[in-house]
Amino acid sequence: MPGWSVQVDRTRCLGCGVCAAYAPGSFTQDDEGLAVLCDPPADPVEQVRTAVDSCPTGALSLAITDIATDDREG
Ligand code: SF4
Image 1: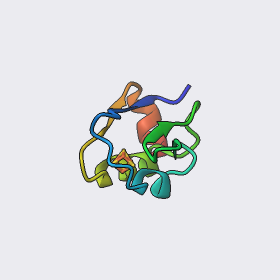
Image 2: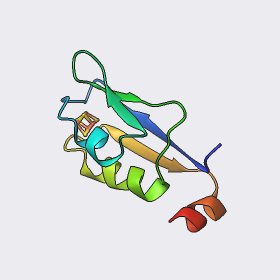
Image 3: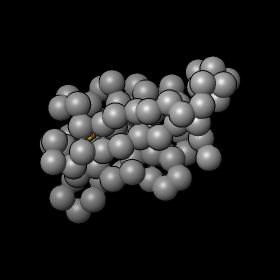
Image 4: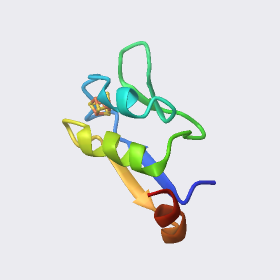
C-alpha cells in the first residue's frame, strides 16, 4: 500500500486526459474519456501530485496517509 490515496470526482471530470498523461500508471480513461483510477496506482507520489495539480477542474484530490512514505518518495 502506498502512503497516499487519490480520489477522482467524475462529476467534475472533463475527460481532457491530462491526469493520464502525467501519471499513466495511476489514471486511465473510460470509453467516455472520463478519468478512472488504476488499482493499485503505479506512479511515484510526486508524479501523481503533478497530475492532481494539473487537473483543470480540480476533480482529483490527493491524501497523504503516511508522511514517511511521502518523504521517501517525494
Ligand atoms: S485531468 Fe481532471 S478533467 Fe482531465 S481527465 Fe483527469 S480528472 Fe478529468
